[in-house]
Amino acid sequence: MRDLVGKVAFVTGAGSGIGLGIATALAQAGVKVMLCDIEEAALARAVEGLRLTNADVDGVRADVSLKGELQAAAEAAIARYGEVNILVNNAGVGGGGGYGAWTDAAWNWTIGVNLMAVIWGVEIFGPLIEKAGQGGHIVNTASIAGMISASGNAYNVTKYGVVALSEGLRVELAPRGIGVSVLCPGFIRTQIVDSARNLPGRFAGAVAATEGPTAEWLDQLRDRVNHGIDPLYVGELVREAVENDWAYIFTDTEFEPFIEARFAGVKAGFDQIRGREPRR
Image (cartoon, rainbow, N blue to C red; front, side):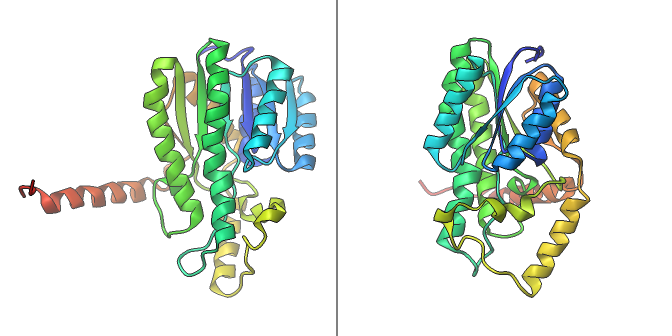
């Protein structure tokens, strides 16, 4: 989508962090943006701040882990702007411990926000983008953890799912004139470590009290995030990706060696059976 001026975008998790960075970058390019977030106060501040720059934006509150609320948000976007051309499935939470610390509530919350909301977003907004008849683009926010996994926690599992979904959709939707990109950010200045601030009551117990090594790890993670990349820079990368139809959007090269090591491990798996004749 080379010409973004006048197009309409719907961005989830847009009240702060990466979502707000993306909404800001798109608005600066002349895109009309419907911001969506579960956190009403942050959403209101984001919309007000962007309107001060004469951006054509609006906001709608929704818990994207509830399909009905996401559907209602889509209807609000159509009522406000008449169409949608760009979808950014960005809302995400950092949840779920590793082996030995799993809980059903943590899995349900993390999968609901990080994966099912992306699936529902495509299901709901895909036909709207097609109906607009101007081509379009979908950006799904995964994580660098969708390429390399240091533990079997729910967050990593959902992000791998978003990568797989995006790769498949890119092939499926290309003939329909819809591009698909997957965003795999590294450490960005967001509130991801404090996702529990928006934990819905139905997922009670999803966040356990932390102490000892886990608490120390969270403190280290929070420090990395607090000193991370500017979300607006990420938004600018996403805008460029939409304009040029990038398949993958990375924010830096810090984890490239780890991804190369993963691919080398995959290659080694094939080398171990190379030359053997499979039984039929």
